[in-house]
Each structure stands twice: as C-alpha cells, then as structure tokens.
Length: 134
Image (cartoon, rainbow, N blue to C red; front, side, top):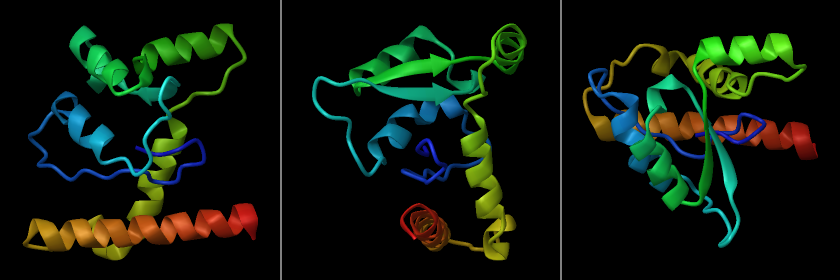
C-alpha cells in the first residue's frame, strides 16, 4: 500500500502462490496510519481485488474501494481526461528493484527478507521527504 506520492505505507511478503485477494486484511492492517474515524479514504486496487466480499472488507476498515480492471481504466482514459491511479504503486515497485539485494531473493528466512524490504521502504520514504520538504 502506498500513498498518492508513492511512499510505502505497508508491506506484505507472501509466496508467489498466494492470490492478492487473500491478503487484503494483512495489507490494510499493516498500514502505519489508520483513517480518521468517520472519514473514508480512497483505496485504488487492481483486478486482483475484484469482488463484493473484498469491497465489503475494505469498507469495514474505513476505505472507499476503487477497483478497476486494466481494460476499464484504458477505456475510461480515452473517454475522459483522467490520469491512471495505479502508476504510483508501480513506481514504488521500481524503486524497490533499485536495491540489488531485493531484486532476486537470496535470503533464506522470511524475517531477514522482510527486514531488508522495510529498510528499503524507509530509504524510499526519506528520499521522498527530502524532495517534499527539502
């Protein structure tokens, strides 16, 4: 989960055989900052999070789900003058790939790999803060 500028807010590491829809609770509960009571934050997700049950869980956590498939997003972009909302997540993934230690997983234990991922997220966050407040 990232904010509007691509700063990582939560990180969940699972096996490649785990579907995205099974990790909704872990991603939302792993977020550092909770939405304010009574307010609805937007949560943009890809087609891996399609479904009424998943949307209901997102709303229970205080988020307004915006789940679109890639084809719907492209069609909407052609008819309207709106920017795609998924690029910030892809940018964050690209920044994570800049850390050579994370590009290929050589770590044997989950705890050491998640520690490296969190360190990379901290560095990305500090770089973004330097750009914003710098």
